[in-house]
Amino acid sequence: MVKLSTKGRYGTRLMLNLALHYNAGQEPVILKNVAKEEEISIRYLEQIIIPLKLGKLVKSIRGAGGGYILTHPPSKVKLIEIIEALEGPIALVDCIDDLDYCDRMPRCATYEVWKEANNLLRDYFSKTTLQDLVKRSQKKNPAKTK
Image (cartoon, rainbow, N blue to C red; front, side, top):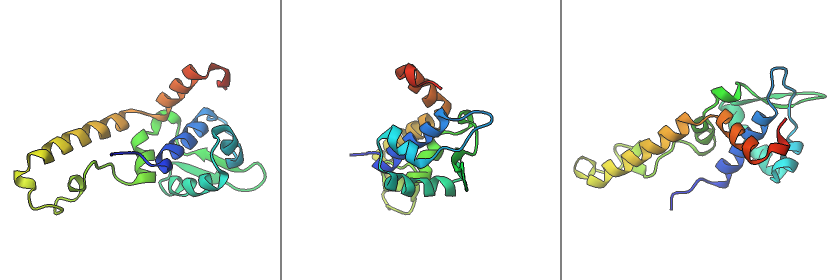
């Protein structure tokens, strides 16, 4: 089964939460608040935030009033950036990323199917932004709109 891990799913929810709090003069969001709003363990969020910082998708603000903010507006953050920061490259099968993985590739009909499916998935995640998720969230939860 091809499946996104909890890390990828929760990390996307974390980023959506930051996007929902995003504005021009944005104030940092405290992970404890995200944990409460998203019903995710604070300890898990503390682990998830690290690759997002390394991927330069969020930055931390230290001190009183500190927390985390997006490094770019939600409209500029693509879902693929979040997923790849948390999960690594998207590949349905190992031979997609590693051309030396299998010596059957030149004659393998299924390789082309996996590659095409992988490209469709990557394309979808590349076209979807955090702003798109914000719009979906606001539609599903109009009372939470900030």
